[in-house]
Length: 143
Image (cartoon, rainbow, N blue to C red):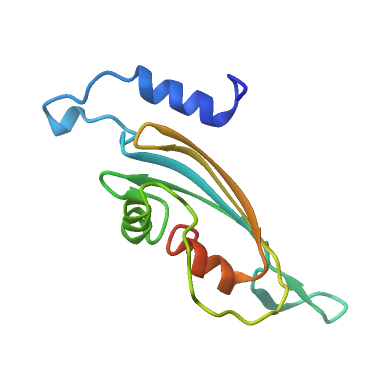
């Protein structure tokens, strides 16, 4: 791993941080439990606003949020559920699933970079569709 990758830089910052102060007023800005940057690139909902030629323009298909755990936070809309899923899998972003999804190929690419409980996280995968993504990653990429 290159010493200047986002994961290495974030890990170095978290490891160099002083121990948590006794007062919550002086608590660190980034919780030590988890600090992840999550990105989903794939099918996005189409807007209903027509373009000059009459066709509906597709909405942006790339979304990025931050997720902090211990306590759950960041701008992830389901931070508590995402942190619970990560805790249940001991930090693994992907899990086994027996959910049956339709065989429609509508690829969704996901990426997770950061730190979970002091361990660097670098996860990237393309799923066949959003059903497969949700079945394999739970609430982690549900935004």
